[in-house]
Amino acid sequence: MQKDRAVNVLGGQLHPCSVDPMTGYFRDGHCNTCAEDAGSHTVCAVMTAEFLAYSKYVGNDLSTPRPGLRFPGLKPGDQWCLCALRFLQAHDEGCAPKVQLESTHARALEVVALDILEQHKAG
Image (cartoon, rainbow, N blue to C red; front, side, top):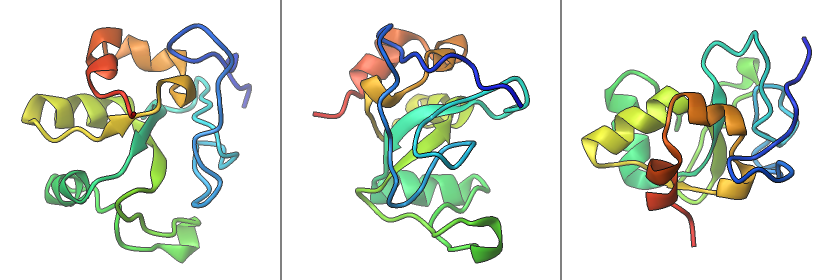
């Protein structure tokens, strides 16, 4: 798999999202992506209890560990490369997590407008 250029939504170099827990489609700590990443795991999101409950409700339980999949289970405050469509869905439902813009891959803009990402910018 060939990684896309590591550029963030602001046009700069893609910053790390998280190494604890280790995140990313490539599990390299960055929200890197490629053509094979059908889910576009490109939004560096800061987990909240509200978002984790919402994600579980819509069928994607992110809080339960799955060691066989190298997935530790997430808790509020963890940063994670979230699927762009899931982020947009949570935004539309009023429970989107905060976003680290410098760590969010530019390909997220194919799904989520920059002004929406900026509304949820982490402080």
